[in-house]
Every structure is written in structure tokens, then in C-alpha cells.
Length: 596
Ligand code: GTP
Ligand code: MG
View 1 (cartoon, rainbow, N blue to C red):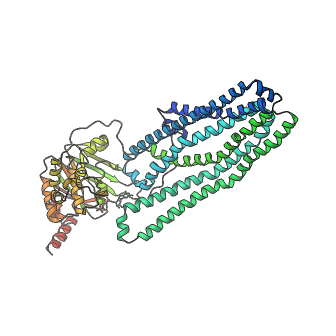
View 2 (view 1 turned 180 degrees about the vertical axis):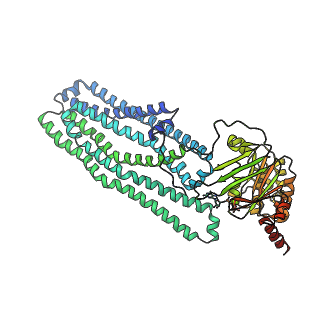
């Protein structure tokens, strides 16, 4: 597995978030302003309570005011109620806005990521594990949503509340305000220390989660192997360890805050004490009215709470930071294999000429080249068979035709045009491929066969199933073509799956058909039927067939024999037999075996 380098993104995380709010930015700004307004309105209750106390309860003229100016009393009371209701309305609207925008961002980025992942090349898929990718589009993305829905809101709420109240405090009594606020910088310093400690924890936490998800995904999808080797207990233990590891890291992360929490909490708790002590002195000295004292003490929480909240916010911010990095890695990833800028459209069928010119190839994560100087030509409509022992490079070779990988040297051409000059969709649409490991979708058999071209009708599906000698067993199934096959084709035999995969490759009426060991699991008789059918397709098609059986390769126009990534023999059956090389020996071996 290749280790990914630290990626540099073209945008900062916040810029990236902003970009993905497109179309909802105004709404989001309204939401943020709403948060500020809401917090300003928090002042109204203590303000009016202060006024009521001064005018009607504790002031010198309190008794007189109550009797002669009760209208003002009710006026202040009604204003207090109106602002409280207004606050409720704003906070409701605000919640809706944050939720709406965050869901929009989530939806948009998730679709974008899925699109990105779909368009990636093979190298990407061998670099990232499925469980890790799943974590990115679920858990990581949810941390991004949480940032929009909650963290940013809390930041604004805390700072605006703190700011507004601080200003109001100074407006009321600057000495009192100063003595209360002088301790707040310590909180910022503590939070800064906390951030440095907690940031790596979130990165670690996220890795553990991905690890756990990867185990789960691999074991669930590979459960047949687990069962075959009776390794359930081992797998359960392995998962248990990963789960424990994740839980421990989670605990450790929470513990980090617990180390800093007492300091922040002490400072926050100090506020009411300062209020009582300093406020008391000021009251005695007459520098503070009773009403102001009530307003101060009614708002002291608005200074203390943001301080307490700060740790929480920083924690969530770091979670977002770790998660968004993972999301952005996919967001900004570009497949190495993509359409050339000047790729012209080739919507028509290929004639089907395939040419390899001195092609060498090495996997990016491999140590040695797996193909060396491969040169051959297949004329339109011809059949070429590729043989060779396991691991000699057959699959690697055919993967270069649809440009799943790029040769490290040399060129692959179709109809005398380098494959890089086609648009990927034009190229791949013309190629029917039945891969070595058959992958069927959990869909009906009809749906699976018509996967590459959903416009074809049942009659045609049946025809392609006949070509691939699959119609007999399909029609024997109780629901025929409507039979739903399980995930990856569960419920079908290996040979049955191969034949459906062949029918799927044929159903796009490709001008180039590539079969990678597609008939290895079917019996000789059925294979003969398939070979016969392939010779009489009702459309022209060049066939590249990887096979081990002489009965398949014998009829080919050209046979390539490969060894260790090189072509060692090339010619038709008669030519290679005359050569008395590897092919000849293989024929001897196989026909000899057949006689036994
Ligand atoms: P069989 O299918 O077993 O008959 O073999 P093959 O002839 O199709 O061999 P293939 O082309 O799959 O592999 C050729 C060589 O490339 C082998 O040594 C593999 O180990 C190696 N190889 C195949 N796929 C990958 C890959 O994704 N990454 C790396 N690094 N090596 C690969
Ligand atoms: Mg292979």
C-alpha cells in the first residue's frame, strides 16, 4: 500500500467550506447576523430588570414612581416580554437556517465526492481502502456538516455575546467591567495550549475510526473466507481490538479537555466572586446603582459561559479540521488518467484494429516492470488469444487497452490512433470487458446483463445470454431473468457468474471484446458452445481472449505466449506447434491429460 504524501490544497478549509455554501451564502450570513442580534437581545431582560429595580424597587423615588408612574412600569414590562418573544422567533429561524445550509453543504459535497470517486482511476482504488473511503463520505462529512450547523454558530454566539456584554459592561461602569474582564485573557491562553494538545488526538481518532470501518467492511464482504477457515472468533477479536482502540482514543481525547477544564472552570467561577466583592465595594461607595448591580449580575453568565464553551468549540473545531482534511483530499484529487484536453470525439464504432508498440509497464506502487517491450497488431475482426503462466502479465496487458493504466513506455493504438487521444467514454463504450474476478450487482439477471446499455429489451438480453450459453440455466430458474442475484452475484455458481458477465460484455455490442479468463470455470462442452457463438456474433468485433485451454486458443487468428512480462511466442496454432516451444508443450500436456 502506497503511503500518501501530505497534500496541499488550493484553498483553506474555511474557504473551501464557503465555496460549498454557494447559493446559500446570503442565507447563511443572515443566519450569522441573526445569532448576533439574538445575543444583543439577550441584554434586554437584564437591562429592563435593572431599570425596573432602579425606578420602582430600590431607587430613592421607587415608592412614588410606583404610585404615579405605573404606566412606565407596564411599558418596561411589555417591552421585556416583546423582546423575549422576538428572541424566540429569531432563534427558531436561526436554527432552521443553520440546519438548512448545513444539509445543503452535506448533500452537495457528498454528491461531489461520490462523483469524484467514480471517476478515479485504478491507482486510486488500489491506494484507498473501501472502509476508509466510506468513512470519508459518512463520518468525516458529518463533522463538516456539524461545523456549519453548530460550531460556527457557537463561535459567533460566544464571541458576540462576550463582545456585546463587555461593551455594555463598560458603558455601565468601566471600573467594574475591567475588574471582571481582566482575567479573560488567561482563558484564551489555556485554550491555545489545549488546541495544541487536542489537534493530533483528533487526527489519531479519525484514523482509528477508518481502521475499524475497514475491518468491518472487509470482514463482512469477505465473510465466505472467514467462514471457510472458521476464523470467526479471530475476526471478532480483531474487530474488538479495533473497537477498543477507537474507544480508548476517544476517551484519551476527552481526557485532554479534563486536564484544562479545571483552570477554565475556576476562572469562570471566579466571575461571580469578583462581582460580589468588587460590586459590593462599589455599591457601598455609591459608584454603582442597585439597578446596575442587578444588570451586571444578571449578565455575568454571558461572560462566563463563552469561556466555558471555548473548550468545546476548540474540540469540535479540531474534529472538523481532521475530518475536512480527509474530505478535501478526495475533493481535490484528480485522476491521472483522464481525457486529454484536445481529445476529439469519436462517437462511431471502431474498426477494431489494436496495436501495441514497444509497450512497457510498471505499476506505480510496484518495484519492477511487469510488461517489457510488448509489440503486436490485431486486425479488425480478428481473434487474439493470450496465454501464459499465472502472474506473467496478461491482465496487466489487457488493462492498457481501455486505458485503465498508462504504459510507462510505448504506445497502445486503436484504429491507428493512440488510446490517449480518445475521450475515455468514447473509448470504453466501444470495449466489452469481462474481468477476471466477476462482479455482479445485486440486481436482476436482466439488469446485470443490460448494465452497459439499459436501452436493450428483454429479447436482446435473451439473445446475449444465448451467445454466452447462459440462457439454459437462467430459464430454469424460478423467476428466470427476473431472478435477483445477491451482492456480487451470490447465489450463482462461478461458471454461471462468468457467463452472465460475458453476456454483459456482449450486450454493449462492443467493437473490441476482451475476455479475461472468462470461461475458466465452465465445462469444456459449454466452453465450446461459447467459442462457437463468439465466432458468429451479429456484429463485427475484435476479440482479445485470455485463456489457458488449448481448445479456446486453437481457433484464434493469433496466439501470444507470455512469460515474465514478455512475448515469447507469437503466431497461429500451426505456427506455434511447428516451433515446438512452450505452446507445443502446453498442447502436449493438455491433450495428454484429456486422454487420461
Ligand atoms: P493470472 O491472472 O493469475 O493468470 O496472472 P496475469 O498474467 O493476469 O498477471 P497480472 O497481469 O495480473 O500480474 C502481473 C504482475 O503484476 C504480477 O507480478 C502481479 O503481482 C503484478 N500486479 C498485478 N496487479 C498489480 C497491482 O495492482 N499493483 C502492483 N504493484 N502489482 C500488480
Ligand atoms: Mg490475470
